[in-house]
Length: 267
Figure 1 (cartoon, one colour):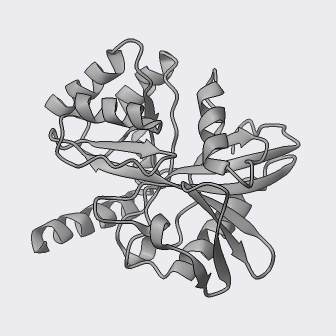
Figure 2: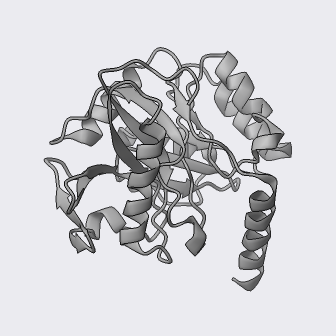
Figure 3: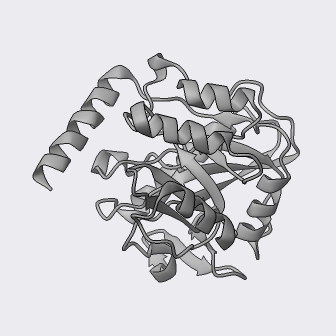
């Protein structure tokens, strides 16, 4: 982590998390805990981990998840939009609600911090409006091949709209050697904040990736109302928070893209 922040305490936030059905849940949480520990090694104070879900249509993991998961226990907080995952060794992670919505133009929108009930298939502008109305953080996440041509122009137009709350999302599936995509770079130059996350793909070898890519918030989250606290603090940011993690190597990038293509053909 470059230019590691000097906080007495901080929260490492992975802002794009999927818990796919092919993931063994105990391995998922063990991997996230290990990744947060690795990311915290360069920090001066204590660090905790937060996973921001991006649940897809038909998925209600946060709503249904409670009880024991191997060495982990999933327990309610003081709000509907979060839970705490506690390991038998005494360590814990915060899990916060969020949705991933596929819009009519075949782009994705994240609604982070709320379990927003917004259907797929609406136009981009209407989806962003509904996300804002729900109280969630509206995020346009980068996706390979999705930010070029007509869809790239739609992203650029959304970023140019004055007044509407909007964030961008980088993710760990991006090829590191390719550098930062133009729209992400230009948005950052204009002061639009980026909330990065891992965006694990639906393959078993991605089960341990959560927590390895994200951003840093000063201080720990309110243990009773972590979703509300996170929303408040992200909205109070006036400059880009420190980020951590790296994109993919070329061999892994090519392997994952080939696997995605095979999955689409066989679907």
